[in-house]
Length: 169
Image (cartoon, rainbow, N blue to C red; front, side, top):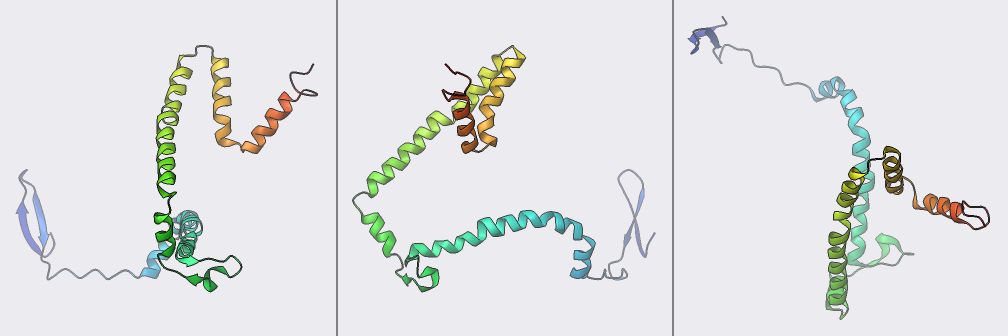
């Protein structure tokens, strides 16, 4: 028991409560000591932090271009500041509503056609009983997600070329 009172819990065991005045105050931990103690955690966080700084935060400086009469040869610092004039011109342009409609239609098509497609493919693949055929189809379906489209187009061209491909005459 510390310098305090004894209390009884509901299950009959004694607990000690220390007087707050008699307990020594815990010393504030030094931030350098905390960093040194957790240095490997910071090393693990560093790649993700650098990714967000380099590819998400730094490109936001380019947003300034929307408020300038941007000239590529002058750069961001030397281009004239026009404020909201670019936005006023865009929203008052007669083509604005056509552009907005096209954007919304494409988003709707994307939602209608490309959202259920992976689900349908998964259900169809689940019904295939021949394991070799199932794995082959899965590979052909998933390869474009992991390999560059240039490589896929090149392989398709090599396979289907009339002179040296799989279907030569």
